[in-house]
Image (cartoon, rainbow, N blue to C red):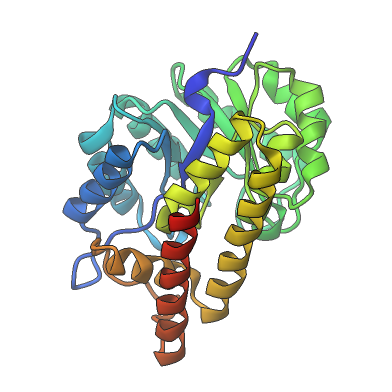
Length: 303
């Protein structure tokens, strides 16, 4: 059995969209979703880290997801990250997402406290018990969850619920993707997390990728995926090197999501700024973004 086709390929991690006063803009979120859909992007990962979810209220996260679903629901695969510090908020967001008809929900192990396996297991299970049938992705990201690294044993246990569709892995170790693939079989979806290793993740068994930098240069990741599918590994490796170089450069701004939105602004998409405590770009950051934007155009022209 193969991974469901809708859970393969390139999924931008959707950026938070604000109006000029810094409030959630449904209009700008809808336009951004339509921008990706018209470009041929397969799916979106909404209200996750790139969406600044930890700075948003439950109602703000609902508003963003509603705008995306109104714009592209049924046209694109939509995965909604619904994890919140409190289980009751996660349940509220999960029920809302399921009612809207998302293709899947996603959850990190928890925030801040460094939760242990029994607590994480119950947290995930409580959300599954509170919803009807929506599939869930486990988001493994030790760097922002106090070092909690999904074990094969816990993954195997959660797969037995019949509700876990797969894993988004941002542990940084591509061998984890292989370990999860060996444990879950070929019908489990696995998304590579670190954008700098998209090619390596796919080679180790990932069915696609979800990434925070896909959103401002989606064409390059789509081309990379095409090269991988066509088994043109020499050109794929060369393009991955180009992409990684762009990422290494843009993080020098010190405010990745502000930089990502500025690239999109140069491309004609207005998403507003970032929410504090994230910092807006300074003069040096803007200069870096302009250089990155020019380099993206150059790489696009060559590939």
